[in-house]
Amino acid sequence: MGTIIRYSEVDYKINKNDHNPPHVHAVGRGGVALIDLRSLDVLEVDGFSKRDMREILEIVKIYHDVLMDEWRTLHNED
Image (cartoon, rainbow, N blue to C red; front, side, top):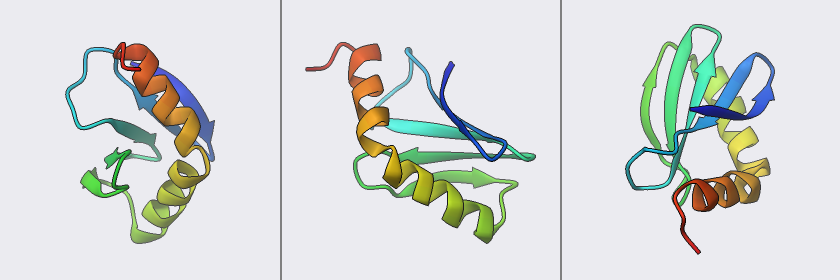
């Protein structure tokens, strides 16, 4: 799983062999979260505060196009 973005001690990662729906893993500060890249819904979260999650979701929104492009590249989607 490669880090696509690192911001404020949180790595945003996409795994080449991962399942649908397209999603990003946020890992850091003692927490992990999975965010759906299509709906921006939080699929799983453990160890992040509500404040952390607000920041994480904001970063995913800002870098949404980059993250989706990386998902498509890693999963051979056009």
